Image (cartoon, rainbow, N blue to C red; front, side, top):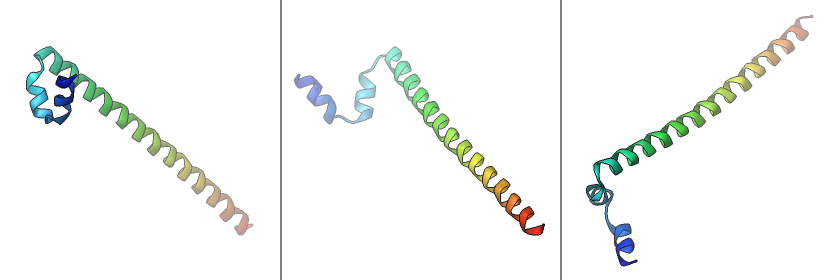
Length: 69
């Protein structure tokens, strides 16, 4: 348990040095997967905003058309 407690106080670079090359690859892969998931979530939010704006524009055009009649 004492070893685990010490790891929490060490910096990431100190911990990184303790990892094997295979572990470093696994950590890098996990970081990339998390970044990809974050980007996908961000893209999804942006797409939803775009759809909402398209609907708003369509509604404005409908109102403008009703006013012109």
